[in-house]
Length: 206
Image (cartoon, rainbow, N blue to C red; front, side, top):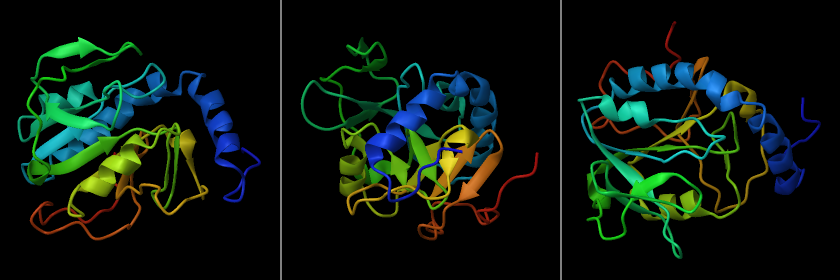
């Protein structure tokens, strides 16, 4: 595999992950990830689900916004400062990196309305540790969100490893979704008022 372990520097892990991203993993795995993610969200009680605007080497989750069960929101990356969250239907602008995001003047979504946040990463490990690009956007965002918010990572299966290096501030997700299905990372038990009673956290059969 990578020849790395949890003691290896994050910079080495990022170099390894970027090498795989550049091989078109997201495009090939995207349809399967989107299908599993949609089925998963159909089992979550109605809430506001925060999505992300993908970079070219990330899986696009835009199709999830078609699920009528939920309200959807989108992150905004400002020129300075941390991520903000706005309604999916807010007016858009083009970020310098090329993705579409809400304009800065759009009303923000109150954090107490958010039930699920879907996040990308360069890689994840099986316990839910997330390897970001180094800016700390999602680590900071999760530090402000209520603990009850369900954190869902989406990634090609090839980018899920046994164990990544983890700093105290690094965000951890509750569930990973790959083209192969769901991985329950068991960070904590989701609250009963968020998940339907038929959700047991196990991988869904094909």
